[in-house]
Length: 170
Image (cartoon, rainbow, N blue to C red; front, side):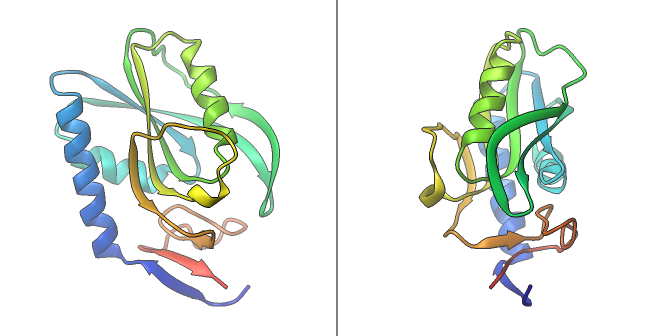
């Protein structure tokens, strides 16, 4: 692996997360929200997003896998399910990056069976050129080219997650 180049700096990330939080706040005014973070990549983004939403936000997590190394296997496995009931609740699935859309389509369909009032998706990054599944994503931080990105929760073999920016590796 080569060196990490900055793709989106810390200031730009923080500004965009604040904008997304304001939009979510406006869309859910007077309602209680449940953020469901997809582990492990979404943790940093979700905590920053939740801190910026001026409303009651419950937090839960799912751990799903569809990757081995850098390749998507196409098969989604739930390693950890949400703990609390989401029946009748307003749910936002929070993801670090949407690539093919397979994992998020699976997770959204799975969570729909738990009868929430609504489900929307918020992602820090989207790679539209890689999309295989038609997936409506209501809140997108940044659409990016097909680069291998790390930082701000994103990793390469568990390294680089704690970088305060989004970087890419040539």
